Image 1: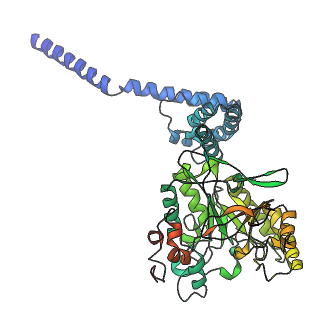
Image 2 (image 1 turned 180 degrees about the vertical axis):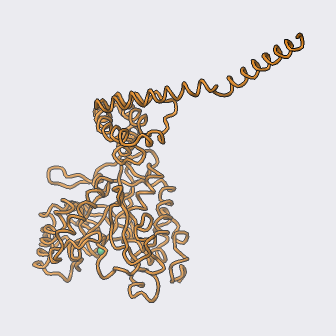
Image 3 (image 1 turned 180 degrees about the horizontal axis):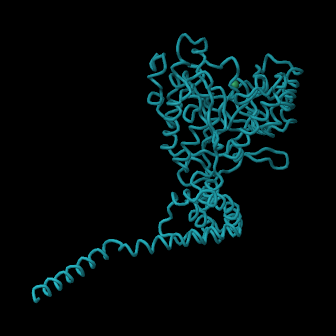
Length: 469
Ligand SMILES: [Zn+2]
């Protein structure tokens, strides 16, 4: 009997010791059940609030979860989708109220506390970036140095095809374009050298009809950079020669590229053209973009824009204009700007005054309705004309009358000044742009040293002309 009692007492003590250890390190079954009940309770009360359309209360109710499991929300399906969709408007309105009052930190705190529900949402990301920049901007310094303006053409998305000697355009492509690999290396080097993208419209202003340079304010030690991209029409004659066919929006409203005659896997691309590549780069390095600035897309109109045959001479132009407008609007939302690169890519000295008027008319009637007014004029071939003897030339007057304010040429050295240079009447703001292409990478390395090392940038794998040729 005594033995039995001893065994019982010993067992009981062992049980108590075991219970002590398990309860301090693990949940007891009772606690697990209680936690499950609590979670269920939160979910049920949240659903009730959603049904009453009390979205703000419902979101705050979810904050009771110590670790909110997004899988759990997905599991509960449509109710929570409804909540996240409807709460977005409330969140944006509240954050914007803080922003309007200059309470950027409050706005940012609020947005960051809810960003877990909106991980890939561009509106919320833009607001977070904007408020982050406003906080940073308090420490901006005046910048009085040069403004770098670089330009290239559409990228050689499929370099092995584009630069293949059998391709009738391979020589032109080599001379005028760069490959995605080169573009990515250029961006990385510019970022490492403290360059920051600025909005082309932020470098000048129109004061009572006079266009003037504007002082820039940038984060300390940053240097301004404008990047423009010419001839972005993906014209028919270049199709299936190694460039993409067009710029599109994917199902999630993200910018992508489309190429028809290629394997299904590569048909939609996110890594073979300057727009998605720059978008991805800025996602990784947000401080490469000052106040959300991206690049300048320079368009002609004779064969449409961005791969859409929007010209009036095309029978299906109405449908194409609809598609192109959606892409353009999305690009604008993302911070891209547009410039006029003429309608027909003329040569300045070969075109008559009459032809010039007609070609400007075509731009205003076919491209401007899609992209909106732009004040930036980018001369085709960099060929410009401002004066005719000592008077403003007829062609230049046409451009001024059409509302163009900043005129861009081509030059390996920086030039941003008033023209005509040797006249008392300096009334036109003119900016040169440094070309980046196969030829300049091989030939003009010294003008690019402060930006990147041309030999390191050069795509030695895909280019058929050796760097030292
Ligand atoms: Zn051009």
